[in-house]
Length: 243
Image (cartoon, rainbow, N blue to C red):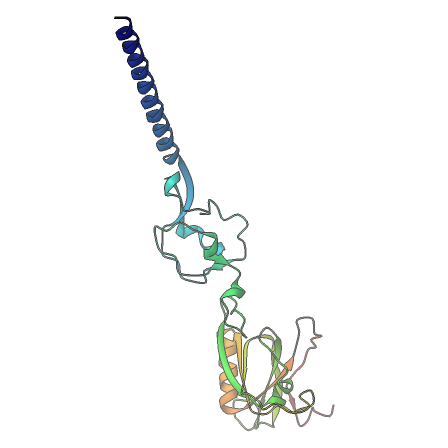
């Protein structure tokens, strides 16, 4: 009889402990589930965004959404703070969370040997011999002055004297392509061979002048940094060249 009472008591205690363990596990599971559902605000793409879009133009294509914590991608951005000056490194599609690796400096998108085109400008290319392009000692990122020359002058009648004008200042070179050159014993003094393909970033009006001159006149470049002295020059012809 006594042994049966002891066995019953043990069974009762075991049952109580089992209930306590089940309740504890259930409460823990509820807490874990609730933690996963904790709302977290992140930036989500609302409208398609093309690659290379400046971060300053992203606001209208993003929205802040509250998502369950376990649905938030690690490192997803909650704001654009600290991202000034960056651009999108790829096209963004609606519904995706904005991640830090989707934004980077514009220079990272440029092909090697090139620089990005400033917003609002367009690129145009023309071919020059090295002596017309500072001996070929130019590289993407340099700024140049463009001298435009015409045999009969840039006058409506086309009957003026030969003339040259420093028509465009501090034009950005976005690319300088040159044909491969054979190595020489003294590369430092070797003259550059072959023509250069010069690409510049300009306005539409400047592009017209460059294309017209490349077709009907000739172009010469100077290496002109932003702090170069700039005088009030006027076109030079035979009457003025010795003055």
